[in-house]
Image (cartoon, rainbow, N blue to C red; front, side):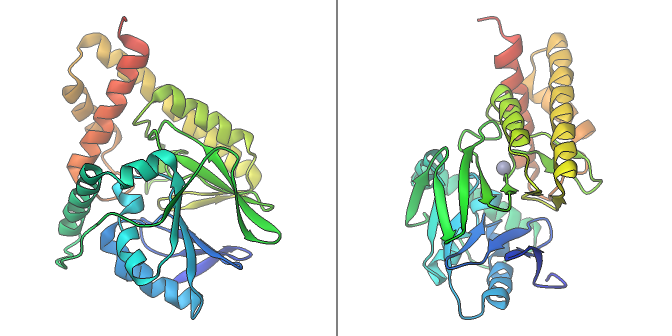
Length: 295
Ligand SMILES: [Zn+2]
């Protein structure tokens, strides 16, 4: 269990203090939570959430993308408090697809095994998903709303939410993932080019706070800008490294194993090695298709 159930990040914006998976809750006329972490954390989320909200209910959960470690707890939590899920169209399509639901459950079961969670909890198809897209506004209170920005590249389904008027940015994994060392690691799983463009778009939003999906939040406009610039630099560095290796051979798995060992040896979050290999292999393939392959 976490030492404290939650803390306040900014006025009315709270963080459920769950190791590796901080979850952001915005309180207002309609209480909203960003992402849901893994299924193994469902109990802890529920406890911390009721410590924060008391008798109030959670009206909506906004998903930044469909990954197992962001959507994993949502169906179980939804059974207990019937919130609406707000997500991109692609995320909605994925969560309504039986095969994808089974895959998300499978990774969550593997995570549970690593976390010694022997409960019989399962990820099932979530209900009541509303799709949103670029520039849509989600009202929370008369003076407050979330603005939707499509930020693909980490996945095709990735979106970010900007809380107005405070300019607090919830970017999911589109801004990169911070390791415990503090270094930011790129994760361009669906497209390098789109990921790079999305980072540029996030920089242009000039957020005051960058609320990351794993481990930490970055406060202050200058620090947010520095963080995103460093993320962009790391992204370009990894691309060059992959291009170099692809010049020697096009063995995607072999290259992915080397990169996993050298670059992702202290990953931001504990998780099945299988999930890490899928991720790194996807990055190698993306660079291959976008920069190396001769059409
Ligand atoms: Zn992700």
